[in-house]
Amino acid sequence: MEYILIPIFNEALNIPNLAKEFHKFIEISDTFIVFSDDGSTDNTAESIKTYFVNYKHIFLSDGINRGPGIAFNEGFNYILQNSSSEQDIVITIEADCTSDLALLSNMIKVNKLGYDLVLASVYAQGGGFENTTFLRVLLSSIANLFFRFAFNIKVLTLSSFYRVYSMPILRELKEKHGAIIEEAGFICMLEILLKATKSNASVLELPMLLKSTNRIGKSKMKIFKTSIEYLKFYIRYFSKRD
Image 1 (cartoon, rainbow, N blue to C red):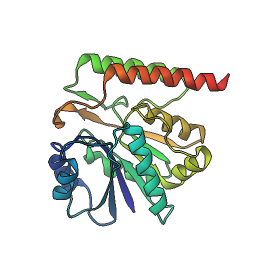
Image 2: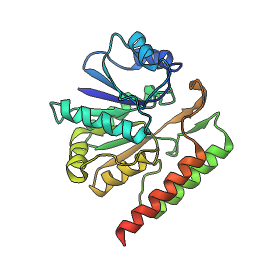
Image 3: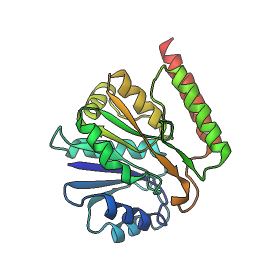
């Protein structure tokens, strides 16, 4: 089974285009979509019912906006509780159509070669940004470089949502840490990546061109708030080690 986990917050306008991308690249059979809602206040739930009616899916929501990390963790917990095979995989993507689903078949093939975690990377050779502001690209590049050095991690892209996980590595992280993700904000992607690499997960990155024009509306990630999250995470992480 291929589980597709999508954290979601006020994406009603993007759902129709997301459904079109699914119809082009995602097989309906043997696919289960987990929409993990982060307290949307628009018509996201209704839009999903309309456009994903032919797909097996569930909409998880408690109506509270707590951050993408909490939404991810709830989704992972649901999948771990319902998966019946260690051969299952979990695909995580953006809800705003910026994850290039044309790349997914290759990501799954790499996973089947024995990689625990496959990442879509804008920093791998051949990847990049399209129609993204210079400031966002600059800050993203600096943050990735700094944290790769600080945590001695060889992965190029630390914060991308677009990944393929093997079921065994997720179960290992759950058993080892109690929670797969504990951070509420966007820093959660670095958190789970660090946990996975410390568990000796095999990781491979495939290049992806991030096209911001595919998104309707603005990115939910706020640069200043996320920068503070990264700084606090850095301080907490190294305080625990001392």
